[in-house]
Length: 321
Image (tube, rainbow, N blue to C red; front, side):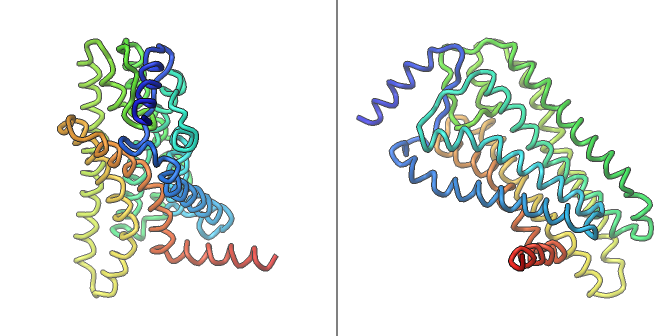
């Protein structure tokens, strides 16, 4: 009865040309209120964790260095990614609100993919920071000045806007079929493009080029930086120095895995496993969007001594006051 009620509601609303219809967890609609509990926990951890890292870096002058400024960019990106998906996910799970206007959906599409690509760009910048710090330590301060770090930040924003905006404009000009039912609780490009009833070759080629730029080029450059770092580390005198250098890179390496493994999995699933169970697509997409914002503050809080110490210091100060 519940399934038929949901389907009849979807059938009535999918005819409305001004709305997309979002989908929760397929097959588990009756348990959405319970499923909302872990989602609520993940969003809370992400918001609190990334806000804490931003507060710590902002209030502690000793952390106003390129490495930590890039980390603050990563935390801002993760916070943006979290706040982009939170409204539609939680209103669907709590209140079963499935409708989203075309304008709101395209806005979410822009920010969701923009912040996702920004995360990749920031990780690339952080790998460059680690390369300079380990391979050219004497020139680190002269290469990565505050002005250069700021310019890298502006370049990252411009890169992501210029990457996502054409994709949005190309999609918005196309007509959508009578069914506006999306398979996620947010607006993904891979999901929206399948509802178009027109020639999408230009969109597909642009998406392919963008995939090469973000999913292939960025990781390749990160791997190259790590190869150069390893070569430099292996040439150092003692094992203690090698372990210290590797430990400095460990947090970043884990953050890279947390982003790219789900990102590649989602792209491969949408491209080569279109007929897989809907639940598979939903689970991979949720991991892709939730794993980096939730895990990054945990990784950097645990593995970065300075961040960990300043978090304890901040909490201890608050207790005293």
